[in-house]
Every structure is written in C-alpha cells, then in structure tokens.
Length: 140
Image (cartoon, rainbow, N blue to C red; front, side, top):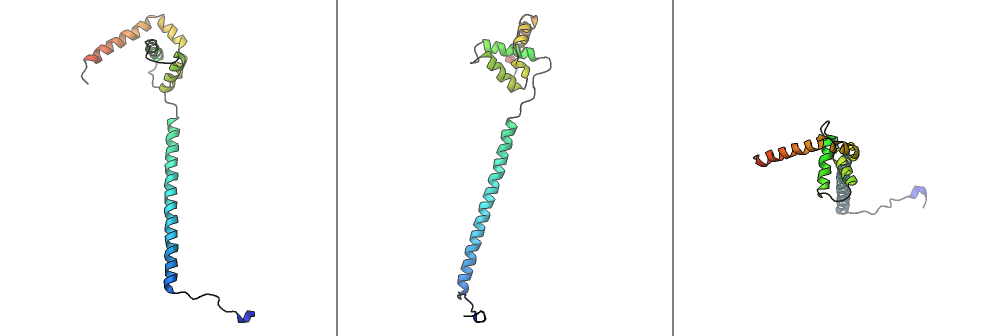
C-alpha cells in the first residue's frame, strides 16, 4: 500500500453508539464538576475553620478597669485562699491574667503585699460585701 492508496481506517458505528458515548462523556463531566464543587466547598470550610482558630488565639484586650488591677488581684487571691481553685497560685494568677488580657495580674506579689498592708485590702472586701447584700435583695 502506498501513500496514494490510503484508506479510511474507521469502523463505521451506529449513531446510537455515538450518542451513548456522548452520554457517558457528559456523565463523566458532570461527575467531575460535582467533585470540583465539593472540593471547593471543603476548601471554603477549611478556611473558615482556620480563621476561627486564629481569632480564638488572639489575646483578649484588658477588661480590668483603670486603677483596679490591685483590687482584682486581692479578690483573686481571696478566691484562691478560700480553696476554690486547685493548683498553684502562680498558675492560677497567670491563667486569670491571660483570660482578662491583663498581664500585670500574673506579677501579683508586690501589688498584693501592698494592698494587704493598707486599708485598701479591707476596703475592697467591705465594698464587695455591700454589693453582695444589694444583689441578694435585687429582683432579677
């Protein structure tokens, strides 16, 4: 056979076979689109979860009122000394400092010492007792 004598090497198929093959290819295409859509959704969900994790790791801002850090330290100390907290006082104060976004609470020793030897320590708990009495009779 020479170049001039080439013949068509295609087996004739029926139109039904061609149509069936097109349906199969169309189905495969739709399947791939579905997988692509599902993968896109999972990527979006993963990004949302990543953002949630990052936002949870942001240190809280200081919520202790100005000038009240030593008062809060005295209160946390009393809570600890009442036996309401397990573990070391140092760990407890660090956790509270982290939770309130107030790093000065973790360095509580000097402020606590100063508050204990002034009238401030007693004043803090007198005020708390007054508030507790008011809250007890208050309608919620």
